[in-house]
Length: 112
Length: 113
Image (tube, rainbow over all chains, first blue to last red; front, side):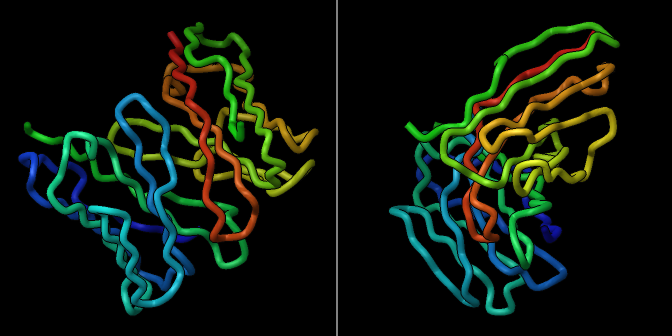
């Protein structure tokens, strides 16, 4: 797997505000996957991006893969209390999942 | 129901007492992996297995052993646990292709005193 860095580590937002987390790599990524972990829960797969410049949406969530395939972002519009949790990015290797390495995650808390 | 099952969910033990955390998946996945999660450090890979009888070290393998005798099971063994192995452990499985999503178990919270 390829090393990815994630920022910010923590984010506190008022309910209704937008939220963005970024995933960066110094090398070209073969793909990017995003996971969400609710407090006390386990990581759950959200989406994967494979193509350069790819943009995918899931309701209020927008995922982007950079043109150079070295970065990705997850943007949440008008956050709700159900969005609370830690968001992780990860990238598989060129040939398989093998040594999948996760970023440190961004922990999102919502102020009602 | 497709799932990854870990047992136990919680475990408190003492230094040096061998323990095994079990992991089983019913999705016929070739790939399985163990992670530990610690505050501020995210998920760090301990060991992974691309198929039966094939295991490899992840980023933090010291103090752990694994085996993959059957496709569905991937137990994590701590021969002589130490307090620095107190952590939250997750087992995960997937198909081996690089764009296959991981399915995680519910986690095992281990405390070593």
